[in-house]
Image (cartoon, rainbow, N blue to C red):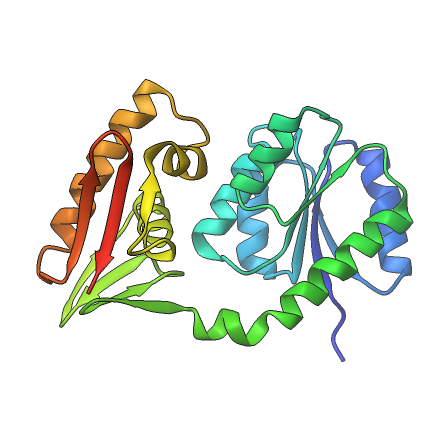
Length: 230
């Protein structure tokens, strides 16, 4: 039976070596990176079972790396390690695709338990993840991992935020969705700039979905939207 492979990032080499050797002593295979710019290539090459990412990394921080990883893999568990203690940092971690969050300093036993728990949750959710590779949006097929919207023989590649917005609308289909909730979930805050971005993205999605009259994004004035899927 193959060992669980962990992609571990830590720019403090001494600490990283201790963590790596301890995890390897517990039977894990560990690939360690100290430079944020190299993590995505390591992820693609090594295809780890789980990622343990330090937030404060040179060149690309852990949040940015997680967003990169989520563009190509929605399923792999991500655990953040950070010395930051502010609630907004924790929230940001989850919004960028994290599954768990450990504050430094941490004990190795805590880290190992969190890793085992994240892997167990993934295993339990396995069949659902497989069957959720795509969803039907009226006459369209939306491939979530590929971020592709298909209508008959035509494919439309969506950007990351277009994909996330469509997924959120579909999850809340046929219900009134508060505009502020969309902004918080997709952009992280409801600033004027992001609000204007939302208008642009809604217009784009409407154009992508116009071939099916049974699919409509209704504007509820002063509140938000209602995604109607007939």
